[in-house]
Length: 199
Image 1: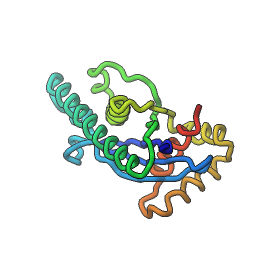
Image 2: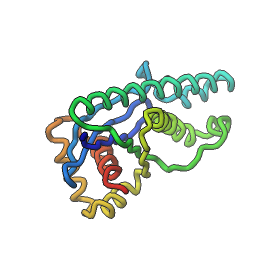
Image 3: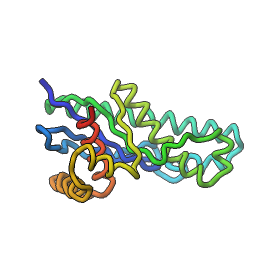
Image 4: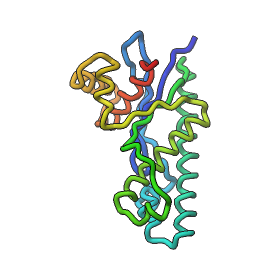
């Protein structure tokens, strides 16, 4: 019988950190770490689609953002298929996707987003988070979500350990993988761990 694994994501504009994790008893084991590009051309125009759209006529802007969203979903789906296949070869079943959220507030209509610089920043991030969520749904993976600003608090409560101890564990888990093992990887690790522990 295959062991269950989860993938944790901390998403940025145009890319995401991916950490695959399983539990050995109650102890987390990191299986894989990747940086996944969610745009085919990795430059500002495509990584910040709403920023680009702000300078375009409205209908052209809609089409551009829709194109980047489609592209991001396809790349996210490919990344999930790849990690699923690799884990299966190693005796693990990918059972859950775990995604860190920003504020979690719904965005307004497209025109209102383009009229607000703060909303443009938010919308860029949400587009790529949504790509991960939709790709996970396509792979029939339940998506576990938590807002980043309460992740440590919730993890401390559900994993029954102090925040600093959990961060130290997440740091130590990355040692075999070498650099980079930044806050991106640590938070992706924690949300994947939390998702497998959660009932």
